[in-house]
Length: 116
Image (tube, rainbow, N blue to C red):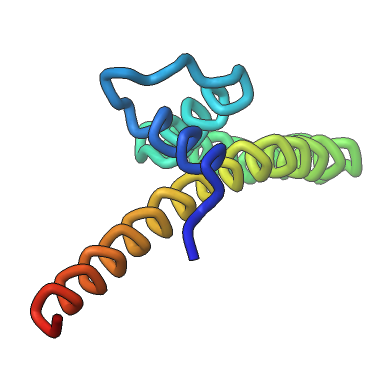
């Protein structure tokens, strides 16, 4: 079973082939978000913001608005990151499936040559 031609062409474009066609805006955004979100340089400031929020709690007497702010911010950030990261994962899966299919086809052809 082979992947759909449109999925393969999209996957090969995201792999950065020399003859690639420009990716749609969302795919470029998904690639950028995935690259930036997965770096320690991005994780460190997020941890720093949480530490600041925790340290500021006693100063502001743990008022409800501070909890609402942090809950809302983390929910929005998580929601916005899920879709681009999932898009990147889906394209990676298509590329892997294409590679496995190519290897399986090569093995079948090789076994036919040996056996026949």
